[in-house]
Image (cartoon, rainbow, N blue to C red; front, side, top):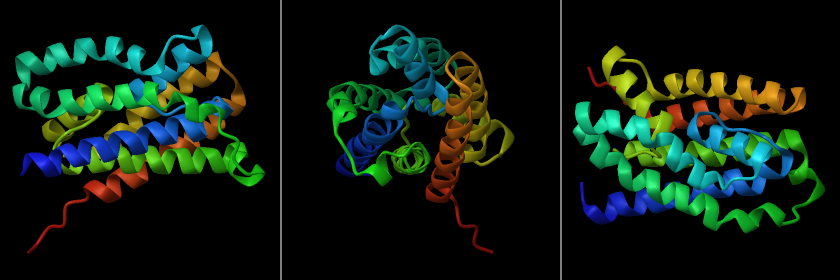
Length: 196
């Protein structure tokens, strides 16, 4: 796989994730799952930068990857750092005024989930990821031969349920829709066609 293709996938995927988070999820206090969700929860509750929080919270997973899954470490460190960077750099998108329909919490949960899922799926397709729990999900996918999108969905559900209790019932319900859309779009992009 060429460096240019992989770099392009990392940048395009990271921008897609950052737009989904900042333009659609943040304005409605919605959550994604995984480390992005944890970063958003910390931001909503205490105001810390989302991308920076993702970096700090992902350190233990990257330590595990360094010792046990060195190839995953090298394949994910770039996507992890670039996506975290773009989430914080594109944070001014949080203040963009969209049309009333696009600003509705339900539509935002769907569009935000779609953009995040496309971003994650694009990176996974080119053997990189946003790191964090996506990296953990990739480990589990290899161990248990399960679709990585399904594992991401399960981890995301746990984060969203905890975040929903900390923030609001509306956040919980709409964020469950978000992670469902993230899981479906990631699964479709990473689907491997089996030839008989």
